[in-house]
Image (cartoon, rainbow, N blue to C red; front, side, top):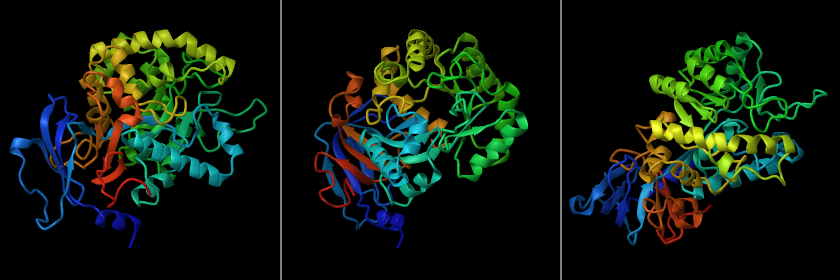
Length: 432
C-alpha cells in the first residue's frame, strides 16, 4: 500500500459547526455556518447551519467527526505564490552548498511543515526546489503544502539569477539556468521542464539581492521572454512567472506574454493598464519590503537597494491595489522570514486593500494564478477540503492571521494537519 493510499484511507468525514464562514469568494460572512468534508476530502456542504443536511457523506454509514469550532472563523487554506523553500531566511543561494545534502533536505522538509502550520496549504516555489519535494508531499512521505515548483530560474549572464563569483565560481547550487539568446532561452525552458518544473520563471530585470545589477536594469529581452512563453506553450501550456522589479522590464514581461509579474516594485500606470488588458497577475511580495530589510545581516549593496526602493514600492503597489490589479499573494519567503506567511495580508491592507479583498487575494485569486480554481481557493461545494480555523476576527483585524498561534486548526484534503483545539481526537491528526 502506498503512502498516498494509506493517507486517503485514514480520512474520516468531518463536520464543523458553530463557526463563522468566510468562503474566499468575497461574499459576506455566514455567522452560524456548517462545513462538511466527506471521506474523499471533498467539501460536501458549506453554508448556513439552518440549511445544512443531516448527512452529506457518500457513505451514509461512515463515522462523521463532529467539531464545535467555538465560534471561530473558518477560511479556505491559503496560498503563497512566491516562496523559496530550500533556503533558510536570509541565506545567500550559494550558502546552501556548504551544508550536507541530507541536512538541506531535512531543513527544507521542516520549512514546508512550518509553512503549512501558518495556514498555507499550497505554495508555488520560484527557484531552488527540486520536483521530488512535490512528489514527497503528494505521496505522504512528508507533510507540507502541495507544491508547484519552477525548479530553476532563467537569467542572462550577469543578471539577477547569475550568482557566480567574478572568477567564475558558480554559487547557484542548482538555482539558475543562464541564457543569452532567444534560442538559449528555449533550451533552458526544455531543461527545467525535463527536471519536472510545473512552471517557468524568468528574470526580466535585475534585483535587490544580486551583486551585478540594479532593479531598473533589464534582464531577458522582450524577444527572449516571448521565446520562453512560446516554448512553455508548446509543452502543455506551462505558465511563466517573471521576476520583474524595474518599469522597463515589467513592460517587457507583460508584452512578452508572462502569466505573472513577481514583485512589480516599479509598476506604473502604463504597466497596470497593459496587465489589465492581458489578464496578467501581480504578486507584490510586500514581505520583502516590510520584513525583509536587516542592515546587520545583509550585504551593504543589498541593504542600500532595499532602502532606496522601499518607499517607491509602497507607492506603486498602493496604486496597483487602488486600480483593481489582479493581485495574488506571495511573500518571497527566504528573503523574508519563513513561518509568518500570512503577515503578507496585513501589508496589502496597509497599502489600501480591504481585509476581505486581501483574503480573496490569498485564496481564490491565487488559485486562479496557479490554475487550480476548479479544485481549490474557496470553501464551496465540490472543492477540495482545505481550510483553517482561526482565533479572532480577520475582517476587524487582518493581523490575527499573521500570527501562527491564532491558526488553531489546518485541514488539508480533509486530513487534520494542525490541531490546537482537539479537532483530530487522536485519529489521523496533526503531526507525523
